[in-house]
Length: 426
View 1: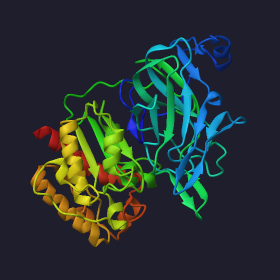
View 2: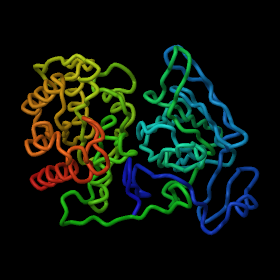
View 3: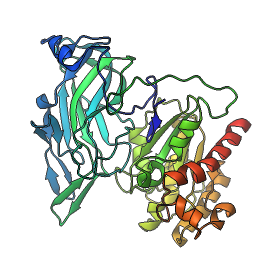
C-alpha cells in the first residue's frame, strides 16, 4: 500500500509517488528494441510515448536579479540547474492525438522543502500542479540522479506539436552573496505520455502500480479527499516530508491527502509562493475535495507580517490579502465559492510568540464570523502541559516542527479525533 509523505497515491487520484518500473514484462533493453522511431512510442502492456530530456529546450529563470538557464547533463542524462521560473520544454512528437496522463522522471533533492515543485504548462496556457513525493539524496549526494517518475497531470488533451513546459516554482531558490544560487529543485529526465487512465508503476527503485482501496463505510474518514494548504509544518520538513496528513492517509482506507506545501511561505499574499497565490494557481478548480485544511502559518508571525483586521462583509474585494487576517478570509471565501467545501484551520502547539498568539485569537474571531472549523493545538491544555518534558522533546524537532514520532503519536490523534467527529456530525 503506497502511502507516504505528500499524499497517499492511487492510480485514479490526483497524486503519485515516484519511479516508472516499465511496461509489463518488457525489460529496458527490450523496450529500446521495440520503439517506433517515428513516434518514439514504446510498445508494451500500455503504450508509452517518450520525450527525451536531451531533446528538450531550456529557458532561464531568475531570483533577486540573478539568472540561470538549466542545462542538459549528458553524463547523467538529466536536465539540472532548474531554478525559479526556469523552464524545460518538451515537444509532443508526430502521431500523438488524444487524452494522456503526463509522467516525468525526477531525481532526488538536496533539501526537503515541499511537495509542489514544478508547474506543468501546455502551450503557455493550461497549467497543472500536482504534489510529488520526492526524497532526499544521501549525505554524499551520489544518488541525486537516481530518477523516479511522477504523475504531473491527468487526462490532458494533446496533439503533435504541443509544447509541454516544466517550470520551477518559487520558494525553492535562494541567492547568497548577491550572486550564488542554491536551489532545492531536483533534476528532471524524460517525459512520458500514457493513455489517460493507464496503470503505471511508480516509486523509486523498481516501483509498483498503486493499489486501489475500497472505502470502509464504518469509518467517517475513509474515502475522503482532504486538501492541505500550508508550509513546512504541514509538509513535514523536519520529518523527511512526513506529517499528520500522511498518518491520516495511512490509517484510513481510500483516503487521499493532497499536500500543497512549500516551506517558509506565508498566509499573507506578498509573492507567488504565498498560501493565497498557490491556492488560486495550483489547486485544480474541478477537484472534488471534502475539506480544505489550512495551516495557521508560524512564518507570518516570525516574519512580522501585518495582522490586519476582520472585515465587515464577506465579499472578496473587502479583504486585504496582504495581511494575515485578510489572507485567511480570502482563503475561506475562495474555497467556499470554488470547491463548495468546508474549511478547517489548525494551529501549532505553543511556543514563545506574542505575534502567533494574536493570530490564534484572530482565528477564533473568524471562526465566529465564517463558521469555519478550528483544530486548536495552541490552547490544548494537555498538549501544553508536556512542554519542557522529555516527552515533548521526543515529539518535536524544534519549537514549531514535530518529528515523525510527533506527527504520528502526538498530533495526528488530535486531527483524527476532530475530523471523525466533524464528518460524523456533518
